[in-house]
Length: 144
Length: 92
Figure (cartoon, rainbow over the protein chains, first blue to last red):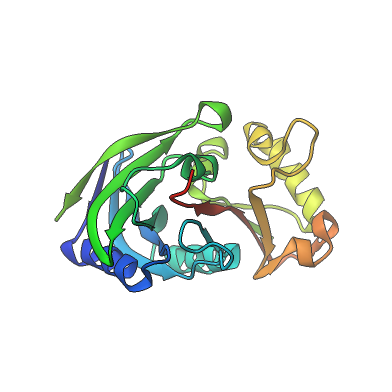
């Protein structure tokens, strides 16, 4: 599948990771699903990383914030199409923890590597399958 | 009352973003929902019948864990949101 987003959205989620460095940032991607399951991002929403005990290598978004964001999306005729977070001093590849904690099948999980405070690589992965059979599939990012 | 279905669960709920159901307790509402859409049951509950740990339920803006859990009443004008958790991190 493909994740399409504007240059502004691309820059915004990378900038967020630089601003929170050395901690992980996190946020939600709002937009629409195409017929084939591809996603088009219409907005990015910054969220606070609630993992105050280990924010440099863990993130969690407050579900209450997700409820609010989901409502906001519905009001704009959009949907939650994915999430983003950063990996400070780590590659832009999903970790075992990322997979274990991922539950939004069909959505994109975008990861930006931030090295010494500067965003480097950004990759997207689509969550497929359920439970023991779930996995992340590499996904093309189209910057419009 | 209205129940909001998150994106990943819509394929199991007739592709609908929301479902209107009669008011009742959270437990009653979920029972009615999964009776209409049986495929949702496995998504929401584990084999022992308990709500899966990553499934969050909010009545309007309140987490049911801080209300009366699954006995929390849901009025005709209330909204029940099903929100799977979002977490992770770079360390394995």
